[in-house]
Length: 253
Image (cartoon, rainbow, N blue to C red; front, side, top):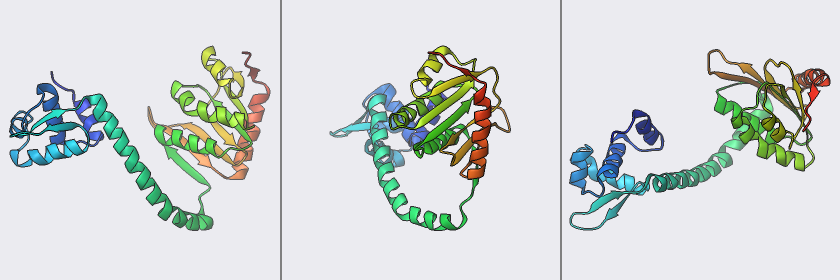
């Protein structure tokens, strides 16, 4: 059974080299093999195969059966991925502590002198990350206007917004009438919801201190947003939100 190029790229994104990918797939297809058998079937140069197999074992993708010669056999993809996840989380935690402890004071010292008021945020992942970061700083009021409510946005925002509501943060959400009732019902658990016939663009305002405007990107599938902590811009965005909110329809659960 052949493996697609997409799966091969996914394995390499997970940290396997080309030779490690070949060796793991060969073991997965054939089962337990010696180093020389793996080298021949994969194929991996014999001069490299012990290094490759040792690396795969350290990363949690294979195990070794002692003997003369030793045999190597694959762990299940589920177990291998779990080992990779745990290893990455452990590494991220250690690296995060090191980076934050040494670099945050440098940033804050410079930040106090020349902090930018406006950032351009490109890419869906970066925008979602910035939204979550902004929501996490909210303490009083959140105003959200979005033409659509995708499953990804709901999964990202719902836990944070439910928590913020539980500690007294006022949340207002305005969206279009095209959003299905099930999603609107879910949103009404954490926000006062209103709908409009049409909406162009969207964004959020947090505590009249931060604002994020969601725009159309330069090309198809390109996400673009503007984030700012300029109080004047945040106040303007709130006033515009309230203007639209005033004649929007209240969602009835």
